[in-house]
Image 1 (cartoon, rainbow, N blue to C red):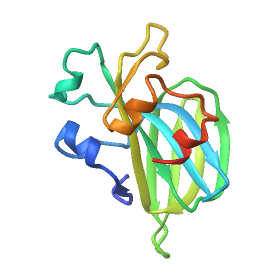
Image 2: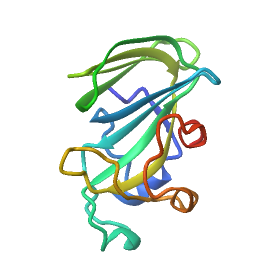
Image 3: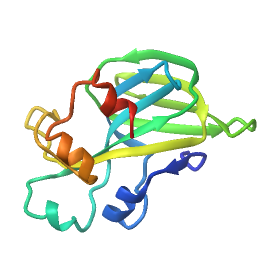
Length: 167
């Protein structure tokens, strides 16, 4: 159940889909933990593709939309399993009933992640790309935000703090 999430910065997703697409199932590309904040950022491939693409993406050969989900004020972190690639993961968020906190579980073949966080979740770095024959996402990405498209053509390595730390 992802109804417990309060999504922030959803404009790019709404522009693509007309509304926020389902975020309870996805392909999980990376998990980034940052002690400052503290935050957990998930880089995910969305399970649905938009019916209409923005004009700047129309002639591009893309088949997948990716974004980052950043959870704030993280505590009680447990990563019991992480064996990428994770082709199918589920996100479950349950309210804790105290100070806008939620318990988050991300599970699937190759991942078992749990933590508590604030119910506000930042959405960012929305991009479109073509999945490579080997299933990777290392090729060219078309970003929805101009600043991302000026700075990046491909997804930076997970230690690139300005990309993973700032949405």
